[in-house]
Image (cartoon, rainbow, N blue to C red):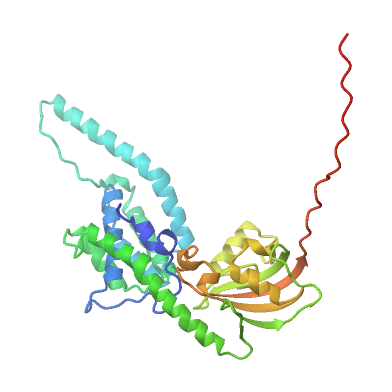
Length: 370
C-alpha cells in the first residue's frame, strides 16, 4: 500500500472513509498513555514532510506552534490568510527559489573545479535561500502548521495534540515509535474498520434515544420523523418521480451542519466566503429542486409524508442515507443523519405521451432526373 500522505490523513473523512461526528474531538492530551491514532497521524505528517518537503528549511518550532494553535482555534493567522501564503509559496516561490539554489550550487562547483579542486561537496537538502528572510521562514512555517491544525480540528477525530507533536518530532529525529508500514496499517484499520464500527454503534444509540422523544414516529423502514407542519394535504408528493422544491438543513448526530440551503444556518467560515463571492445578495437563501428518486432513500420516503408548505424533521439511519461509504468529510461511514426540511412546492410527475403509432403515409417516389 502506498504511504498515506499527510493531506489524506488529515482529511481522512474525505480521503479514506469519512470519520464523521464523534465525541471528544481535539485536546492537548497527555503523554502518559500512548494514543495510536494521534501518533499515527503525526508520524504520517512527519514522513510526508520528510519525503515531499525535504528541500524546505522549516522553522519547526513555528510549525508545531501552528499545529497546536490551529487545532485549538487559537491561531494568530486567519486560516484563509495561511492558505493564501501557502499557495503563493508552494505554487510559485518554491520552484523559483529551488532553481536559483541549484544554479548557485552549480556555479560554485564550476569555480571550484576550475581552480583544480575536485572535492565533491555534499550540500544540505534544505537550503536557507529557500526563504528570503527569517521572517518569511517563520510565517510560512506557522501557516503550514496552522493549516494542519485546522484540518485536524475539522476532521472531528479524537486527537491528542501532544502525540501529534511527539510523532512529528520523533520522525525528524529518526527514532519514530512506528514504522511507515505500521502507520499505514493502523490508519487503514482505523478508517476502514474501527471508525465505521464506532459510528454504527453510536448512530444506533442516537436513533434509539431520538425515537423516544415526543411526537417522533417511525416507519417500517426505520426512518424516524416528526411533522411540525403538515402542509397542504391535497398537494403531496406521491410518486418518487415527483419534483420537489425545498429548504433544508442537514446535521450530524453531534449537531454539526454539513449542508443547508439557508444562509443563517451556514458556518461562520462559509458565510464569510459567500459574502466575498456575492456581496450584494450574500444572505439570500437558496432552495433546491430535484426529483425525489434522485436523492437518498430517507428523503424519498420522508418527503412523501407532508404536503406543500409542510415542515418535517427526519432522522435517517445510515442504510437509508449514505451507508458504509459515507459522504465527504462530515458524513462518516454508517452515519445516521438529521434533516430539517420545508417542502416549498411539488411538481407531480407526468407520464410522457405515448409515441404516435399512426403509420406514416408513404411518400411518392421522386421523379427520375431528366
